[in-house]
Image (cartoon, rainbow, N blue to C red):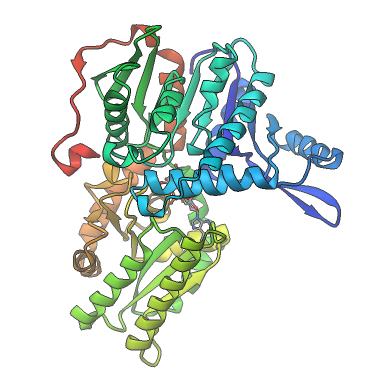
Length: 499
Ligand code: ADQ
């Protein structure tokens, strides 16, 4: 890794949640893949993580002291950005989760384009930028994450900050005809062009972004493409922005190690004891209308009707992790899922066999890993997904290499995993049912061959590879010298080319 400066990570949430119990504040550490991958880099180079601490309580002395104590455990600095309840509502719930989230997942009918949400999003982004500015040193490199914070670089540039600023979008970037529906489309694109490097999960996202810039901002910037990168050049000051693709991975070794450990092995064995002679088809999804859970249930119902030989020989275990339940669309989705589960179980259950086992809760890590390890099939059916880490986690945990991954063509992970997964269109109920049927009947040697291929990929392109690659591109390349040859050509023809 190059560059001597510290790393400043900025994300909506700090890698911990502050909780109040009986008047005292406690830090609950975050455990996602991002934290696992970035923590060693932050400790090694020295660094700061800036984010919201997960509470809308006013920042009391006790709260600040509790965050201070948590810093001692992390080994790098934590800088909280406090939000009050109104700010959290408009910036996080409305603008991030009811404007950008549905729009960027091509679901415009679910967008609430509220002007006050745009204003407060701007105000909160300015506050994050203020926190960065306050802690920034000359040689620092700033890496900002995700759709909550797309304006931070613009605010920093206005404050004359010249350090290198990079951004990674964890969710998809929509095509031009969808993005243009955003009332603040030009402003938001221009905001993103204040970064030096903008990273996306797939080539499809990069191309969408480049096309939006070339069509919506022709007076501001020119767009070229080369070797999988786009180079966008500001017309006025000739500054260049590099647009690249960095598919996020998981801590593969950590998942494989924990899946092999005795507590998970034992749990997995007991789980399957409850399903003797039966294959488990597993679904693990956050409660979200982008994940395609109702269609997965419809496909499972069709499978049982169309191929009755599977009745009593297969169980769908569907885990739904509660999320954003305060938004009405999510509550409606929950009801729809529960109605479908009830209908399928009502129609097909027999003594000793319930076709769908439904869990609506966050599983403990050991329990989740035991399901990953023991299920014969995992089905991830998003209508659209930045990546879909669940698919990769399943492969990492299948240490016996006998599972089959069924994957939506519209998950970002499809670009890396399509060769060895069974791919399907999540809008095609019968096609999805056929894919499950094919997986249920797949011979063991083919399962093994495919799972080996999947695990090779998940191992080679893990989250540490992702961090290294992003930092290498961000820190090593001299953006001004980045060679530009080809003119930007929008679109591509085949599905594989698109992803
Ligand atoms: P998500 O939309 O949250 O992430 P995903 O990538 O599948 O979707 O990650 C879900 C995470 O939640 C996984 O790491 C999983 O282990 C965890 N999880 C799932 N079920 C759980 C359960 N029952 N109990 C506990 N934990 C559970 C967003 C984008 C994705 C992108 C990621 C990372 O929407 O497209 O892949 O960020 O960039």
